[in-house]
Image (tube, rainbow, N blue to C red):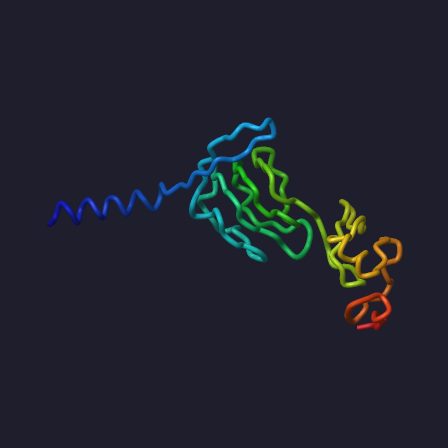
Length: 169
């Protein structure tokens, strides 16, 4: 009984540090590569949250998690982490400058809600360049020219451009 308990305790201790998943990942050359990812941070939703206090991110491979933020250039990961790899993760608006942080697949857009209440991709200066989901907005009859974003914030958007009224909030 003591041996069984000791084995289970030891297994639980090591398992908490060594669980990893694997997936076959399609590479650009058409081959499949086996990716071993960290279970603790993979397939998770960290939208609008950060991991600035995490102490165990060094060298992690993270697969299919969302770290998306509402505003551009938000810090999500500690500066002390020198190496991480992200596969198919949503890193929209996440501040990423580390040379050892590798991003493969996924999304790294910079966007911000504008006065027309639409999410627009923004350049490095914060200037809107392209509306997100442009095809949907065009189908509904909305203008997608960034030069025509109203100077004042509109109150709400209904089903079409004729229903929109500019109201100062």
